[in-house]
Image 1 (cartoon, protein in one colour):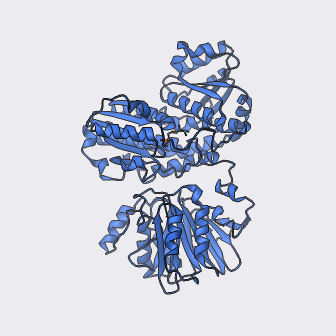
Image 2: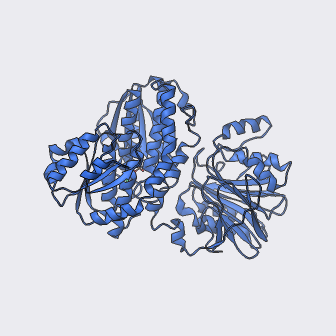
Length: 616
Ligand code: AGP
C-alpha cells in the first residue's frame, strides 16, 4: 500500500513532508513525490522514481520558497503503470492549480479518462489516480475545494484514501477515504497533519484520530473539521494519544510484520479482485492488450514456474487451470526447469509466479522459456520488477509490500490471481458457461470476509501452538487442492520456527513416511468435507492414530466426524474444494507464527533467509 503525508501550519513544509516520507519507506515503494502550495497561486510538484534520496536531491536543486508551509507527499507502490517520474504521485490536472495523492484503485478510471479527454483534458501518466486530479480541476471551476472534492469523489467507483491541495486555499488540505486504507489526522498547535500511518507523524504529534470510510476532513493550521461524505453532516471524532514507539507504528501496532501481513490478507485479496472480478457477469477484466489477444485461444499447454511459496501457489494454479480449461498444465520448480532443456515452444503459455519479481531462478527460467518461443505471463507483486519487465503481460497481485520474509499475503493473492487467470481464460476459450463463471465469481467475492472469520480464531490457534511447540518434527498431509497447502504449511513452520516439517500427499503415507509416525511426530492433516478425497484423509488420520501419532486436523466448521478423530482441530468455513486453499492456509500461517513466537525466533527475518533470492 502506498504512503501518504500532509502538513499545514507555520513551519516550512518541505522538511516535514520529506521526513514523513522517509518514515514510510519501510512500507516499500517504487517512487516518491511532494506537492507544495506556493503563495504565488500555484502548486509546485516534485516527484522522482526510485528511492526517496532521489527526491531529496531533486528538491535540493529546486527553487522552493522557505515560507511554503503546506503540502502533501506520497510514496507509490505501483498498481497501474510502470514506476516512472510521471506515474509517481502527486498528480495534477492540465494546469498546476490542484494536486492529489491517492491510495486505492479507481475501477472506472478508463471510462472517466475517456470522458475527460473528450472534454479536452490532456493526461500525462498511465495511472488511474491522475483521473481524480482532472475531475477536481473541473469541479474547482464551479465550487470551492470543500465542495469540489465530494463532487469529484462521487464519480469514483473503487477505493480511495486521498489528500488534496488546491492553490485557491493553499493552507487547506482535504483528506477523504473510502476503502483505500488508513488515513490518520495528527493534531498540533497552529499546525495539523495527515498521513496513511502514524509512523509519519510521531515526530510531531501523538494526538491523532482516524478517518472512517466515507468521511472527509478539512485541515487548516487553525483546526480540522470532519464531514460525512454521504450526508455532509459534521462528524465528532475521538482524539487518541498514540503510545506506540516508531517501530511499533511501522507494524501498525502488530509485534511483527508477518502478523500484520497475515491480517492484511482479506484486504489484499479484495484489492486483487477489485475492478477485475465482476460477479454479476462472471467477466474478468484484466489490464493490457495481451488479455484480448487471439493467442489466448491458440496455446496448447501451460507451464507454471516458481520457487518456494510461489511454486506451491503454482501447484494450486495447476489444479484450477486443469479443472476448468481441461488443458495440459505442467508445474516446475524454476531452478529445475532451467537446467532440463525443457519442452517448450510458441504454443506454450508460461506463467511465472514471483512475489518479488527478482528471484534469480525464476527469472532465468523465464528467459529460457522465452528463448524457446513461449509467451510469458507474470503473476507478481512488484510492478517494474525484472520478471514484470520481461513478461508479455502482468497479473499484479495487489498485496502491497510484503516485508516479512515468510510469504503470506502474497501467497493468497497469488491464488486469487490464479482464479482471475482461470476464469478469464475459461471465458475466452468458452471452457466455462456464463452461469458457471458467475457462480464461481460470486463464491470468490465472499472469500475476503470468510478470511476475516478464520483470522479471528487467534485464541484457539495460540492454544494449539502451545500444545505443539515442543515437537521437533512435523508431517503435513493434504490431497488434491490441499496437497500444496500441506507443502506451504510445512514451509511456514520450518522457515520461521526452525522446526523440521515435511509436506506430503496423503496417498504417499504408506510409501515411506508412515515409518516415521510415533508419539513424537505430530501430523497436520487437512481434511475438508468439500474435498473429493475427504474419506481418504480420514483414513490417513486413522492410520496415524493407530501408530500413536498425534493429529492436528484442519477441518470444516461443524465437522463432528473429523473433530472426533483428531486430537486438536483448526476450523475454516465450508466452501467449495477449489476455493478452500485461500482459507485452509490461514490457520497454518498463524500456527507457524505462534509457535515461532513461543520459540522467540526472529520471525520477520529468519536466520539464513532473504526476502528475495537474487543470487544462486
Ligand atoms: C516463502 O515464505 C519464502 N520466503 C520463499 O520460499 C519464497 O517464496 C521464494 O523465495 C520465492 O520468492 P518470490 O515469490 O519472490 O519469487
